[in-house]
Image (cartoon, rainbow, N blue to C red; front, side, top):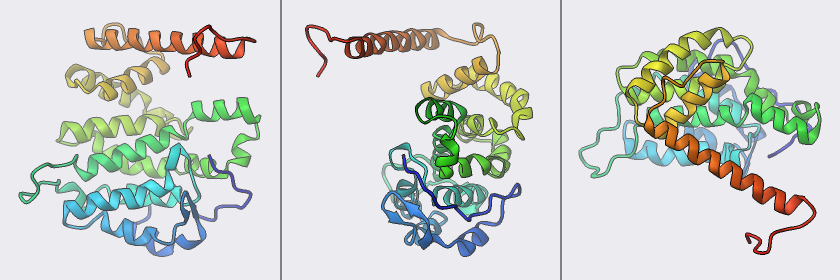
Length: 267
């Protein structure tokens, strides 16, 4: 986690600017990343829309890794997230990643950047804020300006993710849904809960992706929906497994924080 006493001057508009405008109008060298500054980011971000999927795959690491290292949010994270959201409809991204010269295909760029947006939004969600406030008091977001800036940018990011909820490809459609869930915690977006809940039920009726199903079921429960009729045998087994892990972790924490430890401490 990084903290900054300086203000991030990047605007967070309700409407998403064109990706080239975001690229050209941002003073990348003045923004912090995990590796220093964002001076190298424009070149990497530009390659995300290269016609060659192999080039795009390499650019994903260079463009996204430095701004979300170890689940932290940096000054450069918000403009990168806005840029990524702005290219979701770019022809090089939407065309898919089929390349006859590559024997093993990675996941499509569109799915990968959606995943990144969703993971980053989860790193700035209400639960993370509540945890931060428990440890650092209620001034947490005042101190962690980068996270607050990302949270302010959620409506602009959601505006680009929302159309993909109806995408023809199920993987894109489902990933967009998982990405949208932490975004709609923003007060201006909570009215989308009912629509996302409908999409969630359709996903649960068809998808076998464990990550997607876990995220969707957790969201529905958070929104007050009864999920008992939506779970399959795999969901129940996973839920029971997670419960055992939580119990083991609680027991482990108790051994180490309760004034002593077990005969065989888990080094």
